[in-house]
Image 1 (spheres, protein in one colour):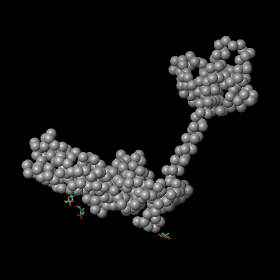
Image 2 (tube, helix red, strand yellow; image 1 turned 180 degrees about the horizontal axis):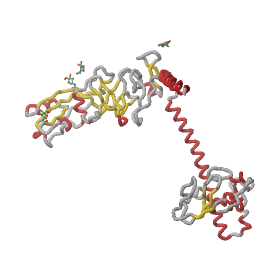
Image 3 (cartoon, protein in one colour; image 1 turned 90 degrees about the horizontal axis):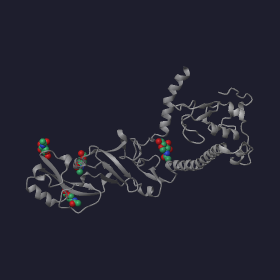
Image 4 (cartoon, protein in one colour; image 1 turned 45 degrees about the vertical axis):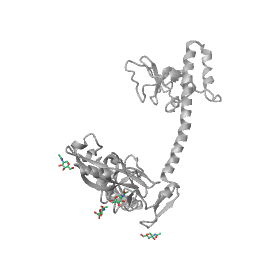
Length: 373
Ligand SMILES: *[C@@H]1O[C@H](CO)[C@@H](O)[C@H](O)[C@H]1NC(C)=O
Ligand SMILES: *[C@@H]1O[C@H](CO)[C@@H](O)[C@H](O)[C@H]1NC(C)=O
Ligand SMILES: *[C@@H]1O[C@H](CO)[C@@H](O)[C@H](O)[C@H]1NC(C)=O
Ligand SMILES: *[C@@H]1O[C@H](CO)[C@@H](O)[C@H](O)[C@H]1NC(C)=O
């Protein structure tokens, strides 16, 4: 009890110590679709000032702009220093009408003046592109980059709401029509901190020690590259293990088939020689179990349910074919692994171990089973 109390009072201390050592380590938000790294960070006072990101339910990352509220982050381009944002409520034009980037480190990449108009729905109906999420049954909202078009409409029954510089991904010549493109994501850029160059050269950008604004570029291997190395190691191991396993299974199947063929017609004298012929390593002396030991292992004929006792599934691990009703199977008593009787008998004539778990049934040979079932 005392120990438990001591431990539980120690635990928060240990936890605090760990947190203090690595105060800004935090797991990425959700599915890692948007990579989060310097200058961005999910924790307040980590990363660069103004670059805090938050995590919403459904694994969505958001950016809070000081005067414009929350935007969801679609993507971050660290090389070009651009961030792509969208509206959680799916009505970007409404957000653009009140977009104010002051006090944030972000700027528009390009912008274009757009005029927003409100027109009676009767005159816009099916003639112009309207902004659906700002319109209602009586009034439609439209936007155009053409001042002259806006003025012409205003002289009829429309009302100009406002003219605003709107962030665009590319500057376009103002067009004599109403736009449908304000639903696209907004692209913003930042100039400080300047990490694009460092990123381009494969470096890791970060704050200088004890500094809240100065940055430095380091070229240490990134954690992702280390885990990449681990990945390569795993792939190499797999690429060796899989062919080796396939090879072993192939030899076992071959042995099983060969045995079936031989049983069909070849005389028994030749059968005794056959194992040596199919052994993977010819130098190994055939040292399997003797026929009476093999025969002492439990043998059963599968019923309609084809249910097999012990840690077995529906296929024979040696020939990889499914067990069928009335198949004769034999199980190794020590480990309870079962196989087609033909397959395992052939195996045990050449080997003394279970082909699945490599347990050695002959280890108990000093006290052999003599009660056949
Ligand atoms: C942005 O908001 C701030 C604070 O409300 C205000 O001082 C500033 O004038 C606004 N900028 C624009 C372009 O509206
Ligand atoms: C947008 O309008 C402002 C005045 O509201 C003007 O100063 C600016 O030059 C215009 N920009 C473009 C690209 O037309
Ligand atoms: C539709 O919107 C206009 C403003 O654009 C507003 O004056 C009007 O009351 C709204 N009508 C309805 C039915 O909500
Ligand atoms: C960083 O700040 C700590 C105290 O906050 C100080 O002990 C340490 O010497 C400083 N290191 C450098 C390189 O300035």
